[in-house]
Every structure is written in structure tokens, then in C-alpha cells.
Figure 1 (cartoon, rainbow, N blue to C red):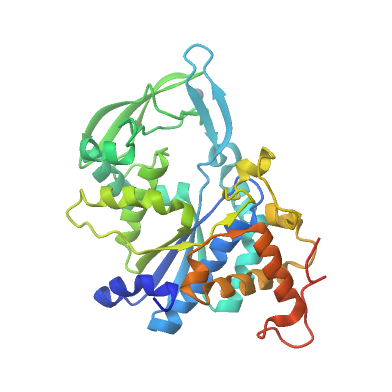
Figure 2 (cartoon, rainbow, N blue to C red):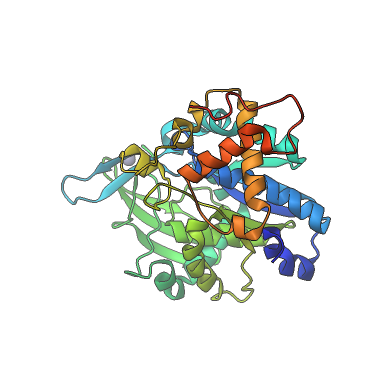
Length: 363
Ligand SMILES: [Zn+2]
């Protein structure tokens, strides 16, 4: 391996596509931490590397996960968990505002720096496409084969639907029942905590919002991406690599079984080696080394101009991508702080003379 983008080489040479689409995620549940931005920056840099190395133009497609829980409730009688998604709590306009506030400036700067265009699509909007509905139906038709792959511990793969009156859905679908299923459609019955029983249609041509487990959602999304005219490349943090073994196994139950190539990006770690995550940060459980800066945990706390932050990420992730051994590994916040000091002290040769990061290492 000479370059991490070479992971896509085999399929690219076999398919000779006219275009590539790199798929990456956008979390909307609160301000992003550095790890999320590293993955997103890598998507832009990998797209540029693909263009330069293989001569194939590439776009980055960010999927905004507006299905994340905004609020949860428990039924006092049965103990089952109900969830209200960001989409149902805020609506599409405020979700778009969140994406713009947390990511707009960074994505525009990285797009300008790399010449790679990007698109943002919410999971809600993606769900409405006909190919998504067809692939969802295809997965439901194979549910007996897939259920132990998508839920190896218990074999339960709940599909849940929000109540048409209030938008709450039963997270684990305990009382969701499949009424009928064929290639044209799927009908489910579900129960709302406040409004009782309702029926939802999920087949092609319908637009009911649907809640899937993480593995099931990723399988359907990768199946949809594989049907795109542009060759898909999945870009995700390396912590998702174990999950992909199961997605690959799920693919093997389909006649056209090739899963898209995936590139895994470096994970940012706390001192203990645990992945920097919103949950850890929120709970104050992240064991952080002394060099950790507030902006590494909440990138909106970056003290300087947004352009400087984008430039820093560009430098940082370019360094990681300079050799596969620097990319196929994790970085503690302490190591990131050391690298930032290095870039801030002017050792980066690409920086135009006379410019510097605001304050070198922001406190
Ligand atoms: Zn309801």
C-alpha cells in the first residue's frame, strides 16, 4: 500500500466509473468534536486523492442522521422505550439550520481548498427515494436469513414507525407487527403511548418514516449507494470497521453481493484509548490528557476565525494521509495537540509565507 485511497483501486479498475461518490456522515445531536471533523476532512482529501491518482472526479455526499433521538420516554406500564427523532422534534428547516451552523463553514472551506463538491442529504429525505424503499423491502423479504447477521446476540431486528399524530416511535418495536409483505409493499401495525394502534405502509411508492437499527440502516444505505451511477466509497471512522464485517455478511445473502469499498479514518482517542464520543464528553467520563483543548471536544469553542480551523484540519489530516501507516491508526488528543503545535510553529511547508494559525495552539 502506497496510499490509503488505493483501497478503492480494485473496484475502480473493475468498474471504470465516470464518477465517484464518497459517503460520509454528519451527526446533528449537538456540536461536533474533533473526531467527527477529522473523518469529514478525510472525505474531502480522499476525494481529491482519488481524482489526482485515478483521474476520476469525485463528490462527497454527507448523510445527516436526523433520526437521532431528540427526546426519550418510557411507558410506565410496560417499560418500553419511546423516542422522538430530531426530524420529528425540529422539522426539516431547523435540522438544515443545525447542519449549516455546525458544518457549513468547514465544508465550504474544505470544498474550496480541494476543489471537491459536496452535498448534504438528511436520512429522512433519503428514505423517501424509491431505491431506498425497494432495498428496505428486499431486506424485509430476506429477514429470516438476515436477522442473526443484523442482530447476532438475539436475532431481533425491529422496524419502527412514528405515530402519525405525535411522531413518537417505539424504539425497539416490541409492539410493532408485520401485517403483510411482498415485493410491492409492507404493512406494519404499531402502538403509540398516547394514541393507541396505527398502521404504516413501508413499501416502494410510500413515504412513511421508518426507524431501523444501526446495522440494518447501514445495510440498506450501502445497498442504495451501490445502485448509484457514481461508484460509491464509504468513509467512516475506524471504530465502525468491526460492524462492517456483519454488513459484508448481510451482503452475501443477496445475489449481486458486492459491497462498496470502504475507507476507515483515524479515530481520536482519550487518554485511556477510548474513542472521543459525545456520550463520554457529556458524562464527563472522557479521561482527557492535559494537552486536550476545549475545541477538541466542542469544535464551536475554536477561538479564532473559522478559516483557520479549516486550514488546521486540512494540515492535520493531510499529515495523517501522507502515509498509510499514519492513517491506519488512532490519535490521542495529546498527540493531536503535539501535531497542532508542530503546524502552528511553521514547520508546514505548504502554508503561504506570512500567515500563521491564530495563536499557534489555541487554548
Ligand atoms: Zn401518538
